[in-house]
Image (cartoon, rainbow, N blue to C red; front, side, top):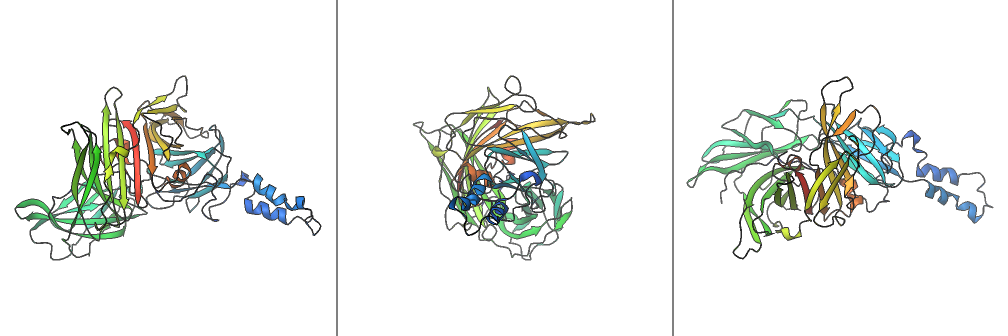
Length: 510
């Protein structure tokens, strides 16, 4: 069965899994980076020094032998933060450690493994100053507990911002009827790059189409057959391509023979509220990079006003993807507040050949709608530390956590141009508001813009509460689709099989 060539959807990107089972879990390995100089002795060194005290001879009492336990209780386990970007671990990131009130405790920078370690009290905060001078992006994780192994992903990293790909050759014997080709590196460039014959060069390659410095290339053969035009007749691909950073053109010439044995994978959204609008999205995931296809629906109603179902078949390319992901999303535009309320459910499967169908996506199980979000810089807050708050149709306390993103600007100390950026705050699911923590002097004069903040609550079958969300946040940052409200795939590639539910509010058309 031939399907018309699909249009790729440009989404955002989501985590490097590092799981802990509860708020007091130990860090994920003894090589978690050096302890800050003012952090005091480590747990192991404390125990060793107590145990080797000369007084602890054969006549030591039971009370004396209990001293090492007391030392263990008095020394909190260190907190480790690992920062990665589209190249891998990110060295030299400034990290600010704050207490529960947001007061600065100390600072440090990540090492060659992207890690930094500090002993902290319960309910502390950790802020990574990511991005660049031109486009800063702060990420704060709240409710941090001793022993946490935290992660953050630098979505503002620009190593591949100007990268392009050159296709010098294609396999011989293209499918009969071929009149041209369409090339994709994930969802880059948007809607693919069309060409009639190699060689060809195309740009627009950037995260999230790059993972750990590598990216997959898929080339589709386009032509006419069986009376239809602009059909996909076959495909070839090359995966794991190491890209050149800093604007270099990476040569990639696929060697996989042309294949025409496509699959059709059916995706279904059930219990769609009559009259609602949304979309179905199908993504093939290769090397952590998603290639997506979208089908919109909306405005339909049943005779009795009851729920509807939406179903669509999507083309799959056997051999190309290691996993597939389906997503059903509904949204509501609230004109009085100028925002979109978005709710999604996504399912990830490691059977990309279609042998195991993706489960039906039941929209009756979506999370409660977030009904509004706002910023208060007057009585309750200040321009540099405003109160970001939100409301929801029902409690979100049973979700895994909440992520808010505000826009901010920093005035140059030498009266230069204002630089724009974002501040992302990860908070417990019981929160209904957050306040950005304090920052050290010298980072600029922060002024949060008075726009509708993006607020996202998530709940995943593979995340066991807020402690694990803190540990895996690098894999699930807000996608560009949510940040820009462009009505496309909103859930990033999930790190494992399972489902994720998401509810969000964002400024309409931003």
